[in-house]
Length: 381
Ligand SMILES: Nc1ncnc2c1ncn2[C@@H]1O[C@H](COP(=O)(O)OP(=O)(O)OP(=O)(O)O)[C@@H](O)[C@H]1O
Ligand SMILES: [Mg+2]
Image 1 (cartoon, protein in one colour):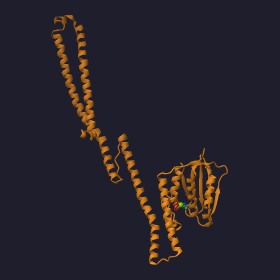
Image 2 (cartoon, rainbow, N blue to C red):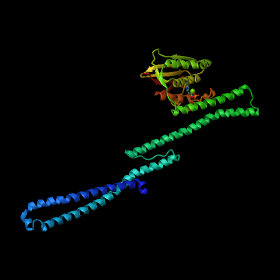
Image 3 (cartoon, rainbow, N blue to C red):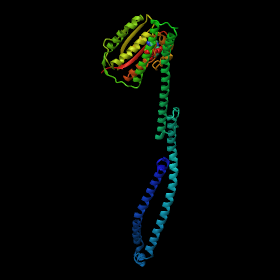
Image 4 (cartoon, rainbow, N blue to C red):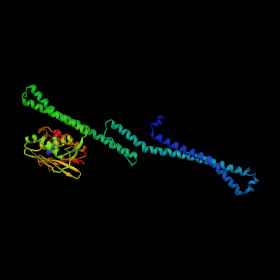
């Protein structure tokens, strides 16, 4: 019984056989009930047709006439049973054939998926199954392959993330270790400058850890949006006010360009502030002294587009699509030397904007020709 339970092909065959037996039994019972009656009717009809003389002479149908009919009936029944037997036999052969064919079409793909899933579970994420046709089994195989490639992608991302994080942590750690060893050996002077340098590196580490925590939170969507109607102008003014000291230090002019009658947007204020601060801090960071950063907003259809434009170092066209990818930096040495950006800010910004149902993109005419970052938000109804 357990053997049958474990084999779909056998189950299919047995179900065909059961169906066949039921069919045959029904036909047999039906004929047993209906044929005698049909014969009796036929007999009565023949008696009528052949005339009383023929039947009378034989003693009112009790003689050879009745015997002939009974004989005829028995003959019919024997041949009927024989035909039924032949039919059962050929149907059983066909059932074997059909169940074998069907099980080959159903069981083999299922078995293939079973062994593929086993291989995937063992860590071979490149495993795929063949999918032929358009039926449910083929669709299942297609979905299975989609799932496998998604798993493969997640696994690649996981490996990449671990690699990236290790790389990012190693730099400040190596630096701190170097200073410490230098201090112990007396090669590095124990002065405030050294301590400040160590403090800066430790600071970078803790920033990185904070960023990573924030990134994992937004990537896992483990936060709720407190969505409200917010005025765009207040968002922009707050950002400018907060970044004024940083900009002044770099002699960068901050401007805003807002139409007077701009509709409010439907957003989580803190989250959008985080995005605006990120974009504007980037603009200030990647613009040389004496540059200009402008925050602008305008209505576009049912959305408000908010943009942060600078006339700084710009972004080469081939990097534009990648800068929203985590840890991606156009010029790794430049970011590191210029205060240690880790390449997470824009990834977080993209997640936040997408959680609001908006889009974010970057435009730049290329190296040294400034950049513009724009995102769209829904207008509060
Ligand atoms: N306004 C800009 N002008 C030129 N390049 C930019 C600008 N904004 C971002 N970039 C490029 O995009 C990269 C990614 O930006 P992102 O904000 O994600 O990381 P980061 O600034 O390097 O580090 P952090 O995670 O600390 O913000 C930057 O390293 C920089 O190369
Ligand atoms: Mg940044």
